Length: 381
Ligand SMILES: [Zn+2]
Image (cartoon, rainbow, N blue to C red):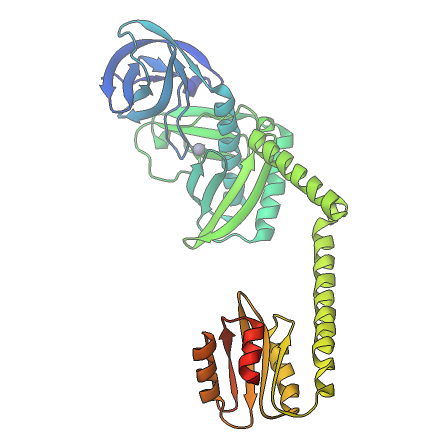
């Protein structure tokens, strides 16, 4: 079959076109349509296929095999006739913004640091690309600022097809060795890169580039970024979220992080003060108890270390055994201290009251599943 004429090579902004239907084949999931020419960009170069309509049918996917572009549609098309194609240009333009942004960043990374781009994925939402070595946060901030400065300069972006590599005689970036024809996308004075995807005509159309995050990936960096409309949409959502947080926390929008750090510090201090007051309250009554063989009390806390502290003090008032009960989830926690080994007492108690626990020598810990009053009665009887 003849190769399909790629209209997007000549004009990346062509959103509607007429073409003749060369063949239609029923396949799984729809109909595979081949046209003599198309503006639909297939899934290629890390970018997903264009969507849109062909003679009223929805174009679900577009792919290329040996120079022939196949459009997967949800309806039959008339073979031999001329049909109108229309691509979802808003979505396509967002991809053009993001793809040119990636070239710009990668070109600058190569120029400034000699770093290669070794992977690219233009997803439904975010854009990721991988570098041959790990980039620092400072390097990425510098490159991001420089890339945005190139956007302000509104430099032309062009694409040329050359017959072979030698014909260019100039340097360009490429992820793999290229034989035969090569299409070079050039951002004037900044970058030249072999690429088959549609790009914006001037850097100003990228609008903005924002790097969102970086992570270690196969010895280099995986960088996630947004550009153009997608970056604008993200910033709009981000600002709304920040506004809500600002009014909920009563901090100016640019002081939210500092405000939260201050608040965390206050909460930490308050928790310490609260624990100290809880500790005083729990320990206060113990010295006033009269000496007894067994002492069993309930300490109204869920802090096991406070319960142990209570048990130590309580043992001074007990000739034989001190038991401190406290809140432990759905059950009742206990700390048991004795003058001698309490293992047998603990075992007997957990059998009688339900629960589990254990210990060594004069101390045992665990939890009971019975009521507090039942537990107290057990130990006092
Ligand atoms: Zn590219």
